[in-house]
Picture 1 (spheres, one colour):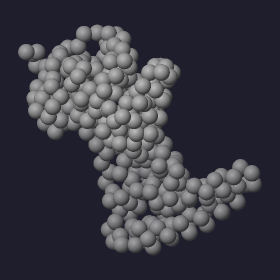
Picture 2 (cartoon, rainbow, N blue to C red):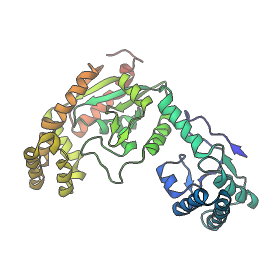
Picture 3 (tube, one colour):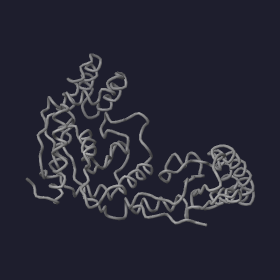
Picture 4 (spheres, one colour):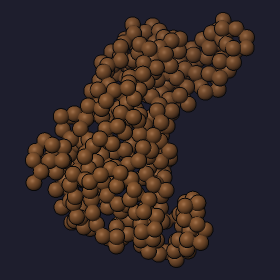
Amino acid sequence: MAHDLPDLSHPLSLPFDTVIDVRSPAEFAEDHVPGAISLPVLSNEERAVVGTIYKQESPFRARKVGAALVARNAAGHIEGPLAEKDGGWRPLVYCWRGGQRSNSFASILSQIGWRADVLKGGYQSYRRAVVATLYDRPLPHRLVLIDGDTGTAKTELLHMVAARGGQVLDLEGLANHRGSVLGPRPGGQPSQKMLESRLVEALAALDPARPVLVEAESSKVGDLLVPPSIWSAMRAARRIRMQASVEDRARYLARAYSDISQDREDLKRILGQLVRLQGRERVAEWQGMVDAGAFEALAFELVTRHYDSRYAKSRSDAGEPAARLDIALDPDGLARAADRLVPLLDEVAGLTELQ
């Protein structure tokens, strides 16, 4: 029996105990249905071999070879991760398009006595629903942007607002990148498809009737694109501008990026990427600051000579913010700013009157 994919505008809820992705490990790593586990019936190499036989020899021989491999791998899963499942266990199985891989595995599970279903249309049906949400339809959520020059603690304030019950969409967290030349994080970025799955899942958990705070970004976070529906909503959104002194921002950046400054050679390599924009002489000076451990002075230089000038035009194009907050970047100052931001969200979104 094939099970239809639910509406992705709500948190994904499937009436099954386990969702099983039987595609190859490489396919699963690129993207998968949220909450699914990987039990591949063909490895990356086996899938390539079967595909080659299909194209170069015959579809019949490919199906025969594939069936033997699926049966062998299915036996390993049944004897391994599924060994302790009781008779009432109910799994949902999917592959690329709801075809031979998922139906073969579901059939074996059903013969054992488990109530196994397959996802109608497989991963492709899920992917079409993601694309429809992020590319084809306007976003129903009311976004408010938290804006401000580099070093105004926007990401930290986003998390603090969430801790106070405000709705937030953390693009940098979902994309695993800080959104600047110093932005790479351990583990690297997910695939574009995986980011979009994370975004759909995050949006489904948010109430469209309440405002959502989003950090002002460009159309890319690291190497990944902000999907059109979200980007259009961000461009139309009202802004709350964070304001702090240059000196305070430099001190904050030196603290916030202390993980990067621990590897001085890598930091100098990253700064080397700015030669095209800043010239060799200036970048060499900055790399000398790294060697000297002068990270606050380096942050001041980056803020005044690189970030502020580059972002000034984009902020002028965005027009005047709906509200401004002058903030201090010490823990008490950030706590006060977060306390003010929570009610200010409703005001800026037009749900209450601006004070």
